[in-house]
Amino acid sequence: MTDIDPAFPPAAAEHTLENRRLWDEMAPDWVAGGEANWRAATPTWGVWSVSNEVLPLLPAEHGLSINWIHADAEHLPVPSACADFAISEYGAALWCRPERWLAEAARILRPGGRLVFLTSHPLAAVCIPPNGAAVNTTLNRSYFGLDVLDWREAEVDPGGIEFNRPISAWFRNLT
Image (cartoon, rainbow, N blue to C red; front, side, top):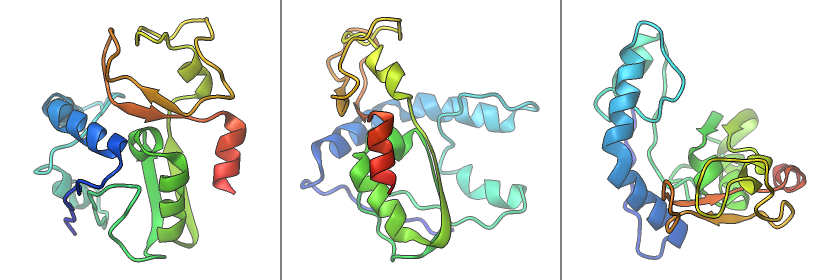
């Protein structure tokens, strides 16, 4: 296992620093839930994280060879064309600027490599009220103006800085 955890420099983008701060604050709760799900006889959805103590054990437990890297997805500390597979389940796909993390994913993937990612659907993003309450059936912001969603001051479930795009913009970023 390679353990790369670069310091986030003061020059890092504001959203990177803010989301790192939020992660550091909330990680213990997410990790506890993740560890419980990994060890459950029947895993459940909603696993947020696995602790740094458990993470290195998982590949051997499942007969895999995995090189884990903990880094800023907009500036990965690895050489070009070094990966066969990259995945983001909400992480970079939600908390990083799409044009930056997608470019980094393209840079590190070898020819024929695969990128798999999951993020919030843009329609869900436009139907979240500005106060951060649950998704509803009202269009609360412009679909075609989607970009940065700053939840730091939300009344309900304050969070970090998220990014989303209309579907057409995702396709433009992917080509």
